[in-house]
Length: 177
Image 1 (cartoon, rainbow, N blue to C red):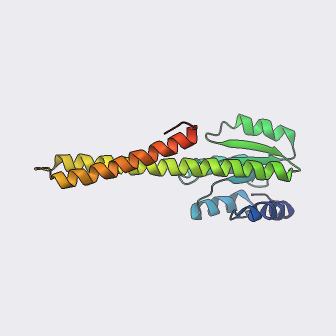
Image 2 (image 1 turned 90 degrees about the horizontal axis):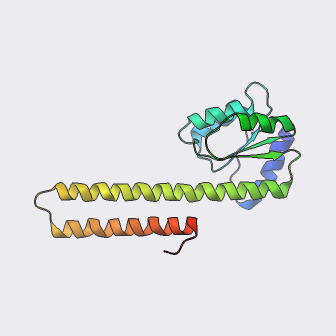
């Protein structure tokens, strides 16, 4: 999100070749509209914009359940905006790049934050799956009488979910399985 059209085009030309689907917003309001329609792995946000600045937009993005955990990279040519961003006390993952943007730094940060976001989403989904399996096991135990075949099926599904979660955690933390 940047009110400068040339910057938006430059960001798109840098990020699209990396395989990212890039959405462009010329204002905070447009960014919020897009955030209600699409799920983003990273948001680039110009701090100084008319009407709704980048920090105000970021606060609104944090209120949206779909963007609450989305990394936000603030961009600005003004050094004092880094202090403004730091004082905003925004929850979640936040970063800052000074403008003019170094293309290598931008692509490195976007790649890093997107990768982290995707891994966290995978862990969240696997944890949700594990929770569902646990609930299914609980429901099965509540049945009278418990059918051994049903119990074995749920146990196998639960083991698979736990194994996948452990693999994800070990990969994320760099620990052996």
